[in-house]
Length: 280
Image (cartoon, rainbow, N blue to C red):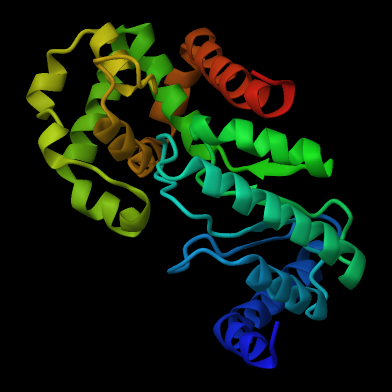
């Protein structure tokens, strides 16, 4: 590691880290230190961070006295919303392991919190990388933060559609709205979605679907011929539509709690927690 390399890395990241420090101190002054979990994310940069870059970033975070508990770097490969990882699995495994080694060193060298862990953003539904992550976690006796909010929203939608009746009608209405406003919904997430417009059925076609057809298209099962990753990604970024429905959406979740809860629980426990922490 030369002075030139350090200067280049600092030139790229220092201003952002200093801003993170100001934000942390503002929140701490309002909520009180220790009453929230500080995370620094850099997963939407133009290129993945190297281990050396991550080490220098952590040193600068320590200088800002941010008691960081999770850090979200950018990894090689595609981490599209709501669908599986696309990339070189061996390379990802090496990167993840190297980053864990850097974190272990930084905790000792810079006095960062001992529970500091890697955070994988858009980590839900990335089934193919869970075994490499598990192997690395066991090697370093480390923890991980897997960001999974989006997959829960989609499982809610699947639960509503599976329940049929008004639940299915609402799911179809949300698809219609998402289809009609797809450009504005997709714009903020352009770097983390790959939607093929030709694979999006028209709202009229979807309106004729049965409960089973809607669920089969949306449920993340790459082995199913009915699975449609473009629909899944569009509805993933269409959460705002449900949010604007407010109590209308929430009341249906409550009415159809059994079906919704079954899908959410099965997805998170069987398809995420088990492979990561309990083995295949």
